[in-house]
Image (cartoon, rainbow, N blue to C red; front, side, top):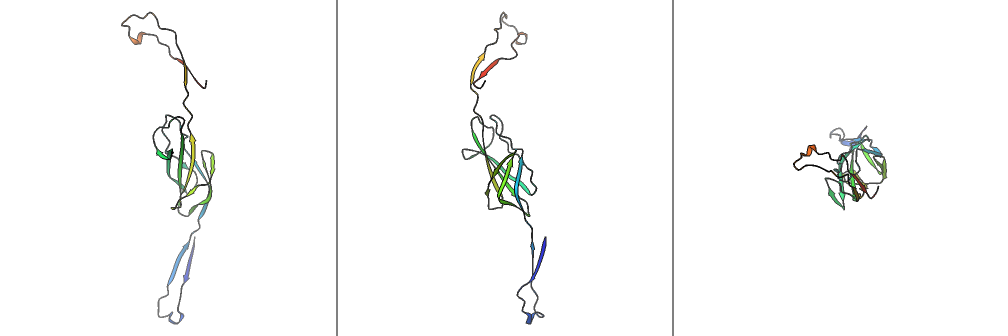
Length: 171
């Protein structure tokens, strides 16, 4: 960094009888960040918890907030089928860093240009994800019938099938 010292408004006639005012200011170099990488955001999967953790892989930037929204409302918990979720990630620059007005942010390899610049120097990026619709059950194939079991036989002594075959609409 560069230290600037300047003498301001000195009355040279009285310079020897009045104190000299020194104004000291430090000029700081600010590094502009144009690319940011984020890892660890898991795409929503129906029935699983929405991921609220991520890691910024760019020096000088931290993730200060990660939230999920559904229909404009903040949500937590498990994702639902056939639902669009928006994740907002707020990035905050460290001291002596600034996020450029146009920044490329990559979440798990998906790059998005643009952002919403906040008053506190942070930037918020938005991504949308849609969970797939649930597969409809079309058929359950019946296993062979279990026959000739005497009343009172223990369940552990009955031979039941290991699997039952089902068919969904996508198969």
